[in-house]
Length: 566
Ligand SMILES: O=C([O-])CC(=O)C(=O)O
Ligand SMILES: [Mg+2]
Image 1 (cartoon, rainbow, N blue to C red):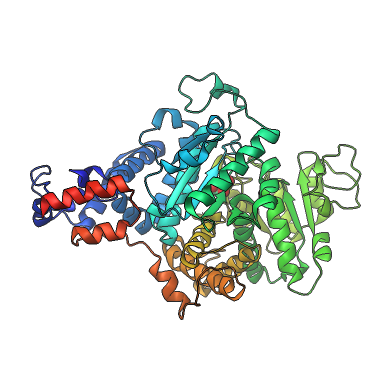
Image 2 (image 1 turned 90 degrees about the vertical axis):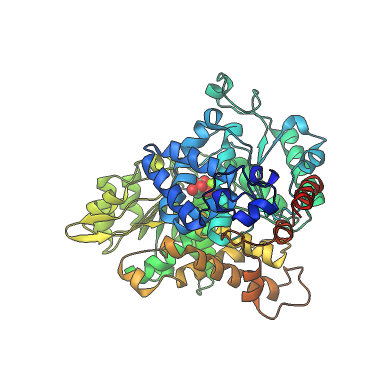
């Protein structure tokens, strides 16, 4: 029975008659034996019958609770169709409604009330061999703001992509929400809100809590367990990255992952526009994690192409909620992260006026303010550039700075466009345009695979430059012809694999890996770490060996099942 109840083991109707007898589950299933392909087909048919995306999300999460391998088989084989249902944009709606749709826990909730006991709480997680944690404190979920503990949908969705896009074993992944309260008043008043009903804890109490969390993760799962920070507020995201980047195996996906995918898109875009990267001028709409992270990485990339980082920063402009980021502006608001980009120029408060003044080659939206790249702005960009680069990176779709249709339409088909959330292809005046999804999902799964395969100590900034270049180099000439800034999603697994291999090679050459001696073939090393989504039709002892990470209690239960069926 344990087999059917354990989603990691359960195969549903795919158990053969022999297996059913051996495992003592004969009679618990109807007699039909299905192939995994037939099951996959059925899942897709069911999905197509469901009308609302949020209901499709719930259906898929139930599948994950029931038959993990089948879930990953379906997701990894139909990325373009299914990723938007378990990830951006549907996951945003799922978080908002998490109180209604919460079913089986898929990760851990560690609250401020657990302070002093975080190690014990982490010890309750049934899998021993955790190698990747995605953690949020729910304060800035996508562009939707403070969703408190209901932000859990994000680490769950991110880790699902670690497996589906890069093949990290799901038993090695742990989604965590740190619940330090919420300042979302609607949630505090909502009887269905699933988190702590208190205002956010801040200051020293917050910092001590995070410190205990990091220390306990290292103690429980080892110092090479990768900790991906996700959807923290700006004020904490930059600080925590600086604090832990050299003492833990960690990165911030919103700062570094997004920067890497954005830079990669730009490296590809300049192949289309034929304006060299070092000659481009960038205007960021937004000056938060994604904007500053990308600006910093562009400066690093430019500096490797022969100009100093300082000269590079001269070509990068920021526009925040108070207008163009210029020195001594009366409104102030120029923090430590923005300061290197503040220019000696007059203050400008209207984005369209800033476009006139800055004359950018590329505008990059990352402010989560919705449709701010207006027809007027896109038309101005098209006058300034033969092929304007327009990236609308804010998520989910409702927060995108413009739609794909607007970008291609208002630029008469000249824009090189990418967006954080997916847009369908656009037909315009007899031509078809394929918008790129400039989402960090092209980067973080590969970083995770590299970290798991090579037992990495740290994640250096250089990783995000290498990943950006590797991703851009993998766009084929056919894809370029079709105007694609990123490789097609239906080959994202091979692309992630190659990025992971490039990262591991750099890690090995730079003393970042614990592996000794150096592996002979990096490709084989990374391949060995990859999870197989195909149904296992092997003896149960092989299943145990593959699980490898169940806890003592589960292990005993499986042994009992096997003994009974022997
Ligand atoms: O989750 C996504 O789709 C990308 C991301 O990190 C964010 O928008 O915060
Ligand atoms: Mg994020």
